Length: 232
Image 1 (cartoon, rainbow, N blue to C red):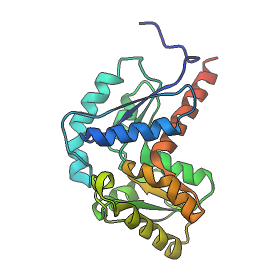
Image 2 (image 1 turned 30 degrees about the vertical axis):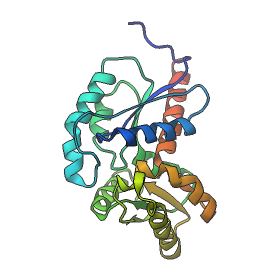
Image 3 (image 1 turned 90 degrees about the vertical axis):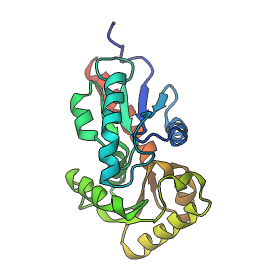
Image 4 (image 1 turned 120 degrees about the vertical axis):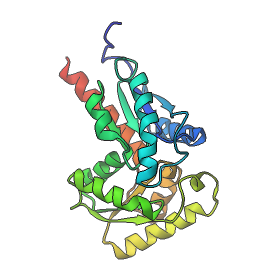
């Protein structure tokens, strides 16, 4: 197969590590809404594994399906220019990055970097308390703990983001608490399923409310552009 020309339109693979297809479809739509003209988004998920990733046990259970899917779709192929791991825990990210022929980013990593690059001190509003230690450890591993005021749990389960009409109000209440108590000037939404709320919450609060899916798309587009420049 001939090498893909870097002048071609950008094609980003978005992998939702959980097995809930409806969430994958919503993540794909959020990614397409954030993408630049000429960027193609393909969103997929493993057929097996946990329906949601909430804590370390779910993350570990998701790895076999995630790794198998990534190896089939990305490793040894030239179909995509970059890949996104669409779980805010950045499930399997470092292992996948080590074996990937293309740039790979997690939506957690991308969200934190987007806030830090704006010079903002941010708080994270995520789903359940079981995820907080994982996110805190990731932030420290990325060297961004100095920029993070706090990681907060809204108490909204991942799958409830699709169907619970009260979810947005509960997340907004946690943002209000963060702005009052944390000394932050940006919010990073700590779940791919929260992407649908970013715009309305940013408008309501008048500060950056960062969706990791959109941030990851921008990261990939920039990474591909840098690689194209290096190959000229």
